[in-house]
Each structure stands twice: as C-alpha cells, then as structure tokens.
Length: 611
Image (cartoon, rainbow, N blue to C red):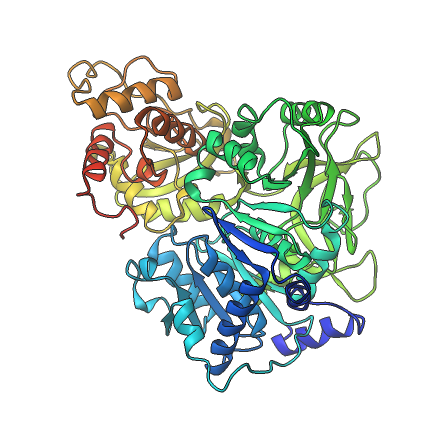
C-alpha cells in the first residue's frame, strides 16, 4: 500500500503542468466577477467577492494553526453560508474537508472524526451546543477561525493534484462506515467532465443534497465555474410542493436530484415553463422504466431537460451520463471525459456484448481509496489490466451489460449493497447493528418492494428468548443511536428462527413480508385531541388505511422515509405550521407525535436534535 506522499507524487506525475485546481478556478471567477451572486439562502445573497474574502480569512486562520496539505478539517454545520465559507476556506488552505451531517448520531460522528484523524472541526454555535467536544481536538466557529489569522493574508503552498481534497464516509459492510479519500486532481477532473453535461454559464443551480452525500460535491463545485448556487433548506427539500415553488421563485436553471425525490416532485412542477427547460441531473440510484418515460415526456413537452448520471463515491461522484428521452430505455450512457469503463468477468476479462459483467471504472476520477483501510482498498482498487498503463480501476460491484442497441445497461448488484432513495446502504452494516440490540441474537436487513409507498428497508430480528417478547421501539431506538436515519429499518419483524437454505445460510427470499398490526383495539384508542385527529387524518391519506389509533406507530403501519416526506408536506399544508421531518422519526407513535407538536407549537418542547 502506497503512503499518502507516494500517492501525491504518483498523481502529480500523471497531470500536465497546466492543470487547474478547483480552488484556482474559484479564485479566478471571484476576481473577475466580484459582484455576481455566488450563494443564495433563504432570500439572503453572498457575492463572489464576499465569499472569496470570508473564505480567505478562514484559510489564513487555518494556516495559522498549522493546517495545510493532507490535513482534514471537519465541517459540522447545516447547509448555509458558513458551511460553504468553511469548505472553501479549508480547500484554500490546501487541506481537505470532512462533511459531518448534524443529523447523524453522535457516536457515528465521533467515530468518523477519530478514524479520519481530523485536525479540527468547524461548527456553528447552535450545533456545537448539541455535541460532545470529544468529537475532535478542537471545535471552532467559522468566525473564530477567521479571527485567529495573524500577520495578514498568508501564502499557501501550491495545491498539487495528488493531495487530498475531501473525504466522504459511506456505509460499510463490516458494521462501520468507511471513508473515501478524493484528491484535488480527481475533483478537477469532475469539473472538466461535467462541462459536457451542464448548460451555459452563469446558471442558477440548486444545492439539494446533504453535505455528507457525494452529490453535494457536484453541486457546490458549480461555484468554481461562476454559477450561482441556491442552498435548499431541509424543510423545503422534504416538501415537494415547496420545492417546486422554490424552483420557480429562484428561477433555477438546474437541479440535481435522486429518482425517488423527483417522483414526488413531478406532480407539482408546472405543465409549461417559460424559457429554457429545467435541467435535471438525476442520479444516486437506478431510474425505473416508468420514471424514464415520464421524464422523457417532460423533455418532449419542453418542461425538463433530464440527464441520467451514474458514478460511485469512489470515482468522484459521476462517471457516465445519458440523455433521458423517448429514443431509448433506461441506460447509463457514455463515460464522462477522462473516464473509462470496463465490463469484465470474474477473471478480469472483457465480456462480449449482451453478456453480463461487473462494471469497473478507471481514469482520473478514481479516488485514493479508503481511509486507514489498506486491505479493503487493495480489494476494490485494482490495476487497470485492460489499459495496462499502470493506472488503477475501481471494482464497483455493479452488474451491467451492453444491450442490443449498444447502450450500457445497469442490471443490479453483485453483493448485498443497495441503493434506497439515493443513499448507498451496506445491508451488513445494518445487520451488525441490529445484532447488537437488546434481545436480538441475529439481525437480517432486506429491501422489500411490497411495502406501502414503494421499496422500504425491513429488519428481521431472531430473538434471544422467544418467550421474552420483542420491544420493537427499544430496538429502533438503539439502532438510531448508531445508524443514520435512512439506514434505520422502517419495519422490524421478530422471528423465532430464520429460514435457511440447504447450505445453512439465511434464505432471504423466504423471509415473510411484514404484517400490519391488528386493528381490533383501535376503537378504544381513537384519537381524542384536535392535534391527534389532524395527524390521524393525514396518516389515513398517506398510508391508505381506514383505522388509525392513538397508539399506532407510523412505521409499523407501513410508513417509510418517502411516505414520511409526503406526510410532513400534508401536515404543513393542513396545520399551516413548520413541521420538521425528523419529528416523525423521533416520535413515530401518533399520541407522542401529537404531544410533541402541541409542546412545539406552545414553545415548551426540547430541540429534536438533542442526543
């Protein structure tokens, strides 16, 4: 395994002398267009000149603290001006950034910081009060970091293509997340590749993804070519009607979005659009044939210009792109400039057309590998035996083939990794956490398509003692302490034993579908208060059930994250009040959710994000 210094040198050797980093591109745009809006957030605007000045102060403050090349700076902030200022300041100091979503469990955040060896963490005052200082050696606000700069602006060493630009953690099959290290050279390659996909400059682009999701890199990096980035708040992202309104109000030219998210958005988009169509960059999971046809219809009507993007985090966000239209069925398209794709068999030999193979990605976007995991890096990042040029290729684990029409078609996974609503989930990580929960001797996780509202994550729990009963709420609570919200199973099923195959492994195909709770006692627990009745009406509409009791659990009735988004949007319209999506996950029982809303609206509820 090569050292970071050797990786830097190797990457530098492959770059032409005239390469341009993302940092230099941003600085050139800011110098040329200081008065152009760079960021828009809740009606406030930050110009390129202001963003350049604030991020330069942070860069100087970091440099004054010894932060530079190969350092990692944690960013523990919600989406807002300070997040972007801290991110660009970190990059301008020559360091790399580590996004830390405040919505993640405290234990997971602590593990990421410790495993990555963060030099310090930039946070805001509100978030800092909710977390333990043990997350890193130091926690500073963006403003405080900027104030520690001494002696005026400092000169940083030149940024080299092989240096680390960021690290993003993804789900890991061993029960712990793994960090992917991406270099400045790979980031610059992404910017070059996307130039063939995106529209004219300057554009107004929505930042829709969580900072800890690699699609966010594609979105914030649009600043480096001079676009205006509109930051979309979580309360808008979770309400498709509000998102459609923001697209119109902010006159967005482009939006990056997952297929699951766009399905709920389509019904609220106008049937006609003045001017150029909205460019949709659709990625994060497979586009179904039905959605492909709907998006193609919108292209034909001149409303949307949809593009399907594919790429793993390990290959710097995007690797291929395909125009979505009626001329084709779902496919992955062609490699972006600087990217190569290979379809290989188990002996790393190219497969002929129409034969299934595993998809490998090579080229400038291939990342360094996994932080502190040389063994796993060696397994997934292998020599590019097809090109034979000394480069590496990433083994994606995705199955694909070249179809009869010559197009690259995605066929699924070779392993237990799944994509759910754009998030990559290693089922092994979920199973490891379930198996550590009270009373559970073994856990199995499965994505089922027969759930209300579409695909959902189900956790099956083999009990330690069948007679002891099963406390699903306690298991869900413990799981939520270790897993991000999107990885906590929507439904938990207790079994005395798992069905087994002939070779003694769990027969996943034979696991039973979740059963809805009996409704016999619901008359006795009928919703009583106005808030309980309001929520019950919303549940009936969203979950398509007739009877709802005050003691019912949203997820046990068939709810999952996509339905939770619809529920929140419905409640906001009916109540005319702010309804945070996290409330549904923190208080899934109707009576408790109603009590929380009553306390929240009266100003007596504790913050939902408290550990």
